[in-house]
Length: 115
Image (cartoon, rainbow, N blue to C red; front, side, top):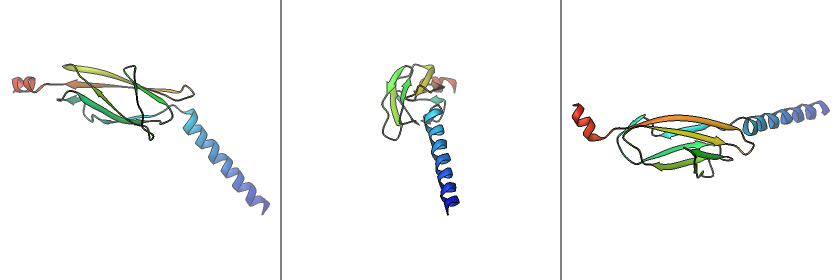
């Protein structure tokens, strides 16, 4: 009986430590869900995604509000052509993740001239 209690205690101890390692020590993940394509033809756009709910998110050094589940939305006006975005997520212990994304704005007039 004592061995079973020890086995369960050891398992619980390892499970808690693995959880702490993966959720507190590793850098936050950034998952972008919109826009799905690199090329867009509407302006402005709303960039949507998820990151760690316990941290902070910046898009091009602009702070972004995170909902309770880590979901975010931020509207941006694009210039014609290539627009570069840098996503920086920071957890409360300083772990940082960076994601870079290019979004290309094409206008309908430019598409009509190409045809």
